[in-house]
Length: 136
Image 1 (cartoon, rainbow, N blue to C red):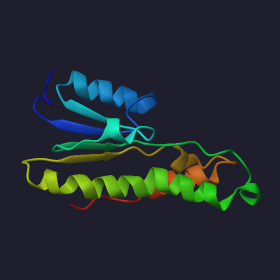
Image 2 (cartoon, rainbow, N blue to C red):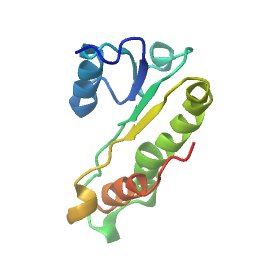
Image 3 (cartoon, rainbow, N blue to C red):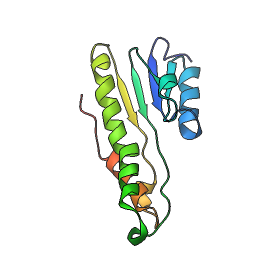
């Protein structure tokens, strides 16, 4: 079952929740997994190659009506969900291009299909991520 032997995977937000499960599964399949998280940059530094990127980092919206939502919250969620996935992709693509194969997986949300009330910043950020294909 170790069909990822020799491959290196970077999982943003891979320390807990869905990302933690993804990290554990990739490791069980034989990948060397680098876990990226936002509170300790030095511990998350990854200086090697990347064969797989899972852009999973995410945060929740504060659950307010649009009229009561601080514009900074919208920016914060777009940065975390969509912009960070773009930047990570940009950073790993050079090493992926030098390898026989590279895979980028972006984790969006069912929220893009159901757009629940009081979650506009989250819904917008996940929709932006879902609509941002990576073109190598």
